[in-house]
Image 1 (cartoon, rainbow, N blue to C red):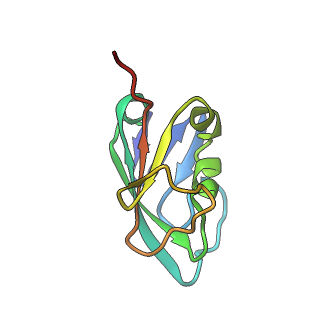
Image 2 (cartoon, rainbow, N blue to C red; image 1 turned 120 degrees about the vertical axis):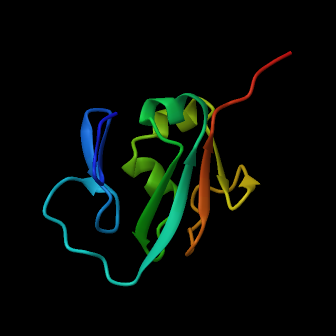
Length: 112
């Protein structure tokens, strides 16, 4: 991952966090009435992103699933990546995030 101010590269796509919704870099209008959330990454995903947290502005009504799609994490979720919303593990991915929410992406746990 490369970081240039508020830009970073994930899966060969550049994302911009200066405005509101994370999006592939393009000409984008700021969203009115945005909420701020914190994304937390652990394990291999944190290593891949080269960071553990991202503060992000999103529009009201954004769901966890929309964040997963925007970051292209669907395949990781299907392979066991667990999502927690404000400390609640295994929440419904159609749950809406609210202002000051923390969304954690946790790798599957294995052991014996």
